[in-house]
Length: 94
Image (cartoon, rainbow, N blue to C red; front, side):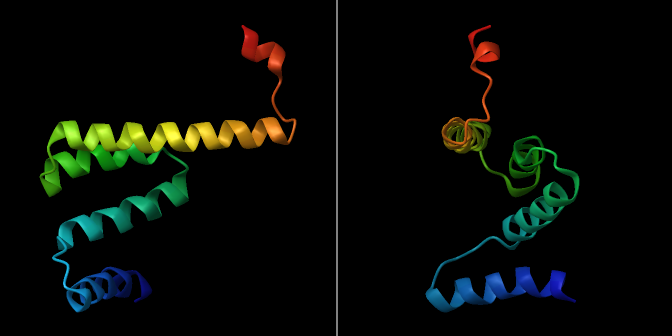
């Protein structure tokens, strides 16, 4: 019940604020997010093909967005690990 309510509430909220939202994109995003949370698989491997094949996003936009997001999250994660001293810099030099 809750799984069905979340995409529906997103569509209702988007109409309230006057933004047109593709229902397929919100359902795909929620489904991929749940699958990534359950499996730990990277979202780019799942979401990029869905954006291209089902939602109709141009491939350059889908891949570029995934690369931009991944580069920011990897950089922040690396800095945080370095701050916590959980990086073995001898391995990094290799």
